[in-house]
Image (cartoon, rainbow, N blue to C red):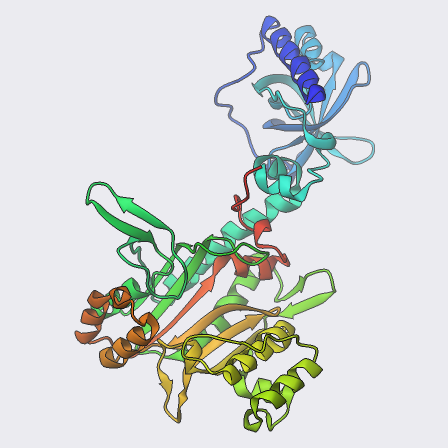
Length: 483
């Protein structure tokens, strides 16, 4: 802290000296071109005005050098004694790393071939009072990167580019869906009751209406109301909130895209994913084969993607007779595969045998599905709100789309029978019948077309497409414990 205070005092002194020399430390609008444009349109001797942050300063007597970064590129600036006024050259000595300046000059290529700007005039735009970390080598503490994202972005080109990529991906998601005839809508974030998923909500209160409310855990039930109303192809890209755990793939506040298509089904949603992901790769990433993680894995987003039934995956690992075995035998086989499993597996309405099977799937199978895979025909106990498979009512017509060992999104043949939907909601609610959204049931009783729906986490999608294995690296301001 003492060192930081010392640096700050030095910078305050420099700022005062600049003021006395006629350089106001915090400037106004400055017309300029991006450094990327300056490089792309480079022409020897051409006049140019640029602006950005100083990352490096080398003082060498009558000729001094700086490296400027404006977020689009880095460029060398040359400050020569015989090209500047006496005051401008003297004031240059008061500049510090992190200062933001505007510079006007001519484009020049050095003997080493480095494109540069020979500065004729410069002006202060913002004085940095804090010393940059390690001479702009970046923050060493990863947690500090998350807490002080502005410093991370300032010093880490890779991080900054990742968030530019995120923005472009979101833009292309919207464009792809609009071009397919989907309409983007907005539904309430503050809701009377949580619905559309099984998750713990955040609670709030409407002062004006004097009623409690929750922050939405999913937009599903409102989007389906729109299908009832005749909006046949809708999507929403926005925030959901779940008051649950934080880990490498979960943040309590996260971005989702939910898509619903009237007169569609699960296969319609598979087609959307097989079209959307290659589109994003082509338009934004530049390749359909993306390196992921630190083990040399490569995800191939070229369609078609594998389709395999849930039970078939279990049989591949555990044997064709798995579902005929008794529970103790299943438990021994699971342990033999290296899975330490709790013998008291419990979930309302789900047998211990089925919970054990799902433990095997979750811990031993899904985590090893690196390439994009549609896992279909899931036991209905795990997806109670979806439509049953016509040939086997114990299964539901859904998919879990798995990439790099993690679920990216589920896709459903949606339940549009209001009587069956009520039964499913009642089973899910148990004694808490007030949790049933009666208005949603009423909407279904007006008639909802056969529908396909899916929802994917945008944060997790960005992780996969940028080869990042932590959600905090793709969320600008992730939730953190108090420092």
